[in-house]
Image (cartoon, rainbow, N blue to C red; front, top):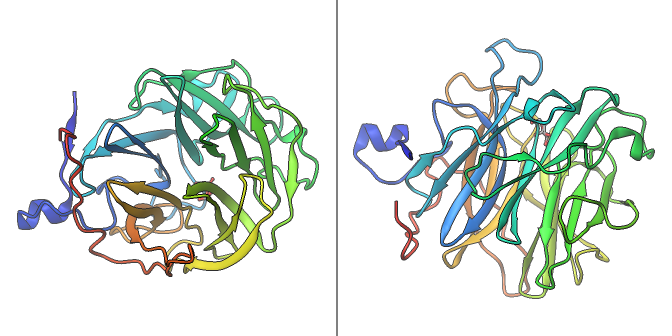
Length: 316
Ligand code: FUB
């Protein structure tokens, strides 16, 4: 059963328009977006750190949906990190795609027996879950990649299914990596390739507009959002610069670009909810504009968020 989540601005002022950041009073981070049958589904990790917390406390992902980006419904918890029997916990960044009539959730978790972070894949018949481990083992473990010796370099999956059905998995921290996915979505198809990107930190995300592929990511520390463009899902990549500036209250930003009902958007996180901070972040949304040459206009964070964009036929 859908539980309406009316945002603070809507409650106080009788407005339908959701203000940034979204999903108060929950602290949320690392948005991933799926547009399915005219509806936007937004997945986020839930930040549960105490106000004086010194690290992420993240046990579960949450999923919300909207027909207009103004009113959101809270569908609760589609999955917890420990739903992967092989995981120790830590529900870090995820990504969601639809394929073969099913919904595939790729997530970062800490592995229980292979030291370091890992990437798992879970599947559901519904975008709101529940999601179940699709393999029974991790898709990527820290020992599979050797470019750096840090424990958190295999995080932040960004999955993209191209028009020809080929799926790609980008991921990484410090070193950007990519591999093709098998048609069954649960295995790597071929080698893992490191992609040299200056100043890359994390949060790779691939989207396509017309015939151009956009590979966005977080660079520098504190992070800002940069992107590159290319003619194929594997590049070659042309750097296009910074599209969103760093946050004031948290060093991470983690973006997801998407199109919905004729307009373009980016979901990201800041820490602007009351009581927010480094480990108490909040997801927000902005509209994105493309120039005629395909480059993106710099995105400024706003308190208002995007104007409502009602999707015809989508039932709130
Ligand atoms: O939320 C935990 C980690 O912080 C994510 O995996 C990174 O993208 C950064 O946002």
